[in-house]
Length: 611
Image (cartoon, rainbow, N blue to C red; front, side, top):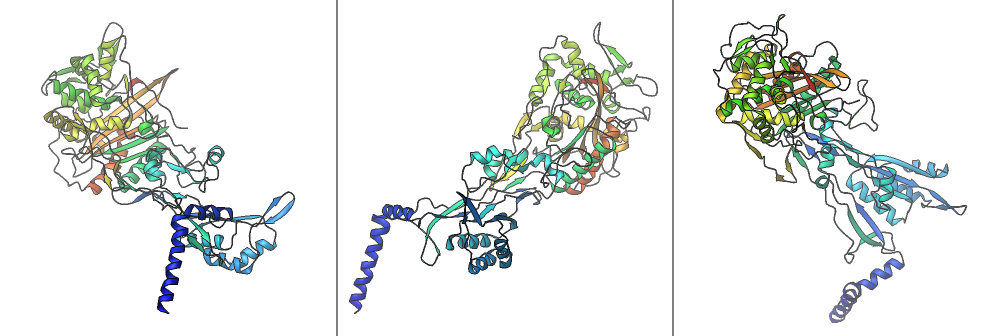
């Protein structure tokens, strides 16, 4: 008896081997002809998430699905059912979806043709629903991952992160009968630039349905594949710094009735972008591009998509190069009469202070503190045209920011200018060159890193792989960088400095104000108010750049418009980065220029103003 059973079992094994190994292709063809082996169960891949360096999500998938029932179709004037009209079927649907069976029955009785539910569903629920569709052979049951993406920081990170948008009709048509033909499409920011890493691959299980309606996966199908979720990315931004920067920029733009504004926070040692905020922007969680605060939503981010002239902040870089080359020394004396002829046709001017443009005799530190245009022009002329141009190239100031974001633009500089002497003189105080705010921030950051510039970095890790920071190169000697940081400290700490109202008691800060007059076709058109600062002034942990474009509420100087944004961000940086209070040094010089303001410059500005 035992021998007979063993023989019978062996014959069964041989028969199965014959079918599944030697005649597998025949079985597949037969299954397809009888429509018993063409059932596919889709496993939806999850798009990778984006997280801040402190572990907060800025973009992540929500497990939302579009569950639909198509009760019937019309073909050749006949009504053809697409779902079983059975209480058992509706009960199975209810068990899988947690929707009352009576809801389905009432829809069927009312003659509804199609109904769609947008629901958050667990992977187990989606699996059960697909099994119900297969078991009951209910062609009218559909399940589409809606691909809803949530952005917890909202508008605060929108200009950097981007968003996922609905596909156009053309995009849907190009996807044919793909199960995810209605999937969302990345639009701008990191969602677009990191899409190849973030997007996953849906899994498919091919099988047949047995006599009881159960789905049986088939190992013999080479179409079966497991899903692969997208990779997560850890960004360099800090959630608190990003939020504070966004709120501060928004407040400055709205209070000063400006066109747009941007704030960037960098780690000078690594090049990490700790925050990059702009206003106006958009709400990435909104289904439509609605107005925000009375302004039309926009995905234009001037931090890397616009180029501005840097204005007086550039004096810091001019002096750094001049001192590093040895053409200007810390004890050199300069005299400002309020203006300086460049040639027979061109003259540079300083702003009026207490009715006079003249600053008198200045050393480099005092010239930075009071923001003297005439002295900065003399520094640039000592450097010379060729070396100033080479300095721009060494800093990569005219390059794209280098974050691989869509819409990044280059800077502007006329290498074939007719009057090189005038161009060099005004370049000394921030005219004649247009740069993106992010590139300008990178240039300043090198002063906080012993003169070594670092490439900006926004992604620290993706898919478990760490991305190392990269140096651009040694721009100036360490001692030169340290000297310039000390000079920038006097801008805030000295009673004659243009940033004296921006002090935070107990902390040493360094900075430089800037105000540029915008010259466009038809004449002057407003100002760009700037500020760049270091937290703290010695061995800084953060450099902050603020630009507010075209303030129209009355104030326009960099210290009064952009300066308060710096203060808000600096206070947050002190908390977040653990900056310890330090005794402030003895203040520099008497209050001879207590009302000093940086000179507004007449500059050519090449920008796109947000609507």
